[in-house]
Amino acid sequence: MAFSPEERAELRKKFAAFAESRDAKLRDQLIEAHLGLAEYLARRFGNRGEPLDDLVQVASVGLLKAVDRFDPGREVEFSTYATHTIVGELKRHFRDKGWAVRAPRRMQELYLRLGKIISTLSQDLGRSPTIAEMATAAQVSEEEVLEALEAGQAYRFASLDSPSPGGDDDGDSMGSQLGELDSELIDAEHRAHLSPLIARLPDREQAIIFLRFYDGLTQSEIAARLGISQMHVSRLLARSLALLRQIGAPDLEAQPPE
Image 1 (cartoon, rainbow, N blue to C red):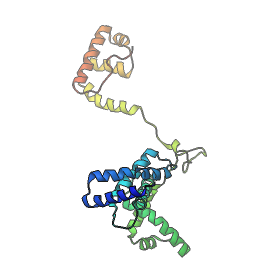
Image 2 (cartoon, rainbow, N blue to C red):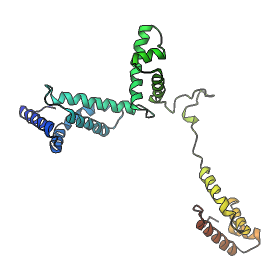
Image 3 (cartoon, rainbow, N blue to C red):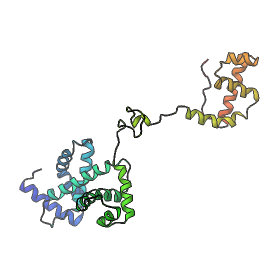
């Protein structure tokens, strides 16, 4: 973005004043004056699958850091300094987004550095380097190298459509190996919670609940099975359900379909 000589002179004065006062209003003015630079740099990364609004937000964070850290006493234009800071923030954003599972930043940085070290050592040695050789080159311990390499596995995404390792069928995919949500699990939890509560009811009420909700009989069928009227079954069922709710049972359908 281009400023006129007068605008550049005014911005230099504001940067000098901000360096001394750290005034929040000056800071906001400096940020606002350079938002166009942040948006421009964000658009340069706009073809990498991230929403542009998110990239502009990341670039704005970089701009904020640049304003806070800029030393107007150095013979460098703020736009040059800010560009380096903002691009670094954007690259860091994509690097962090590339990790399927968030590893500690220290391990992320070491893993990325090891990639270059392994490439260099492989060329120099004519073979793959050992853990000890990598640790020496990276100036870290062997345990840290192993930890970083293990953490690096979280840096790789695998498509659910990719072939499943060891699959019996050529058509098997990673996605086909995923389990499905078991709709019976919630019912099983409810049954486990209800069983001791139902056991506190009289035998006939227990039988009515079992016939109604486990065997799926209608109130008329239950009445015929027990030799009582349907109205009596309805009253006993309503009373039992009310008691179960009172002593802590989860919600039940008080009026199941006939």
